[in-house]
Structures are given as C-alpha cells and as structure tokens.
Image (cartoon, rainbow, N blue to C red):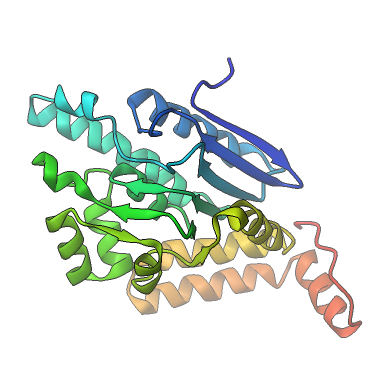
Length: 259
C-alpha cells in the first residue's frame, strides 16, 4: 500500500523522502508510523547510500499533532507516546547511511527533534527553529531536551526550551544547530548535491566512519579510540581501500565498489 503522508524516490543512490501532511506537516501517530516504515526500507535497501529528508509546502515540520497530545490524560500514556517517538528518531540517528535534513520552513517542536536526529542539517534562509512545548505546559518528548543540549550546549538548550522562543536560520547556524544556511531556491539542489558527494565515497568507509562517530559519541575517549582503530583495521582489508590508494597514486578518481 502506498504511503499517504511520507513518500520517497531513489535516484543515483540518493533517497529523497518528503513529508506531506498539510497544512503544517504535523507529526501525527500515522505520520510517525510512515516515517518508521520508510527508514526501515532505507536500512534494508543496499542501493540507498544517503537520504535527504524534507517537507512539502511551506513548513518543514511544525511539530506534533496537538489534538493527539490533548487527549493524553495519564502519565503512562504520555510515556508510551514519547518512548515510541524516541525509538523512531533513534532509528533515524542510528542509520549507517547519512541522513540530511533539508529544512525548508518552520522546524518546531517534534520537527526540530526529528531534524536533530538527522546527521546533517541544511536550512533555507526563511527557516525558523524552536521547542515551544513549554507554552503548552509540557516539555519536548522526542529527545529534544537531550539532543539540543548536546548540539547547542546546556545553557542555550535551557534558554530555548524554557522560553519556547523561536530563532531564525542565521541564529541556528551560530549555535551549530544547522550546518549551512542557503537561499530557499538552492535548498534541495545543495542538499542532494551533498548527498551525492558522500555517496560517491567508498560505502564501507562511510559506514565505518558513521559507526565510529555515532557509537563513539558519549563513550570514554579511550573506548571510542579503540572503536576507531578497530574500524580502521577492518578497512585496511577492503578492495575499496586498495582502489583508493591506487587511484591517489595514479592521480585519478577512485572507482569504489563498496567491498
């Protein structure tokens, strides 16, 4: 059955996924289920080497579905909903293929939480960011209290979460919340271009680099360095490593085969 809210195309090993849930691309339970489904498909599809995730229309994602939140009347239900949301976003973050969030507009609440679970974030100049949950008498529940602190620092995370204030794209860039700010008309071109550049590298090297970074994050430095060394050693036995070195010596572009 075709998805209703989250669709994607794959071209030249780049998957472009789009959430289309007008008018605000809210993260209802049905939308979240489709996000989980498509990322499961990306995980299994060996042809997909990188993912670009964006929103249809004016917003990227304006947040969770307030109507669904409004009917949560017990601590147990609240924990169930947020635990499931965290699990889905952890799936995005844990993917060993780079995920680029192409942020075209409002990126608020659950939308910012999803963007922070992506590995790279590129924003259009008109994008706006915030965690406004405090204005509803709640807090971020899909990982926002933790990822924002780790990305932007504890003090800035406390400020943004406790005030519910929004910031513009330039401010988001200044606190490392996004990697790059581009004109709106250039957003998808640059996001897909970056995905293609990464996809042109050796698949195994990209995978092992992602593993070292993601699994090493939060570990003691000594343990993270052991993981880096182990993965480096694994790559020394690959055909791609031999091709990369040979191509460098011969002053040509390498032809990686993902082996």
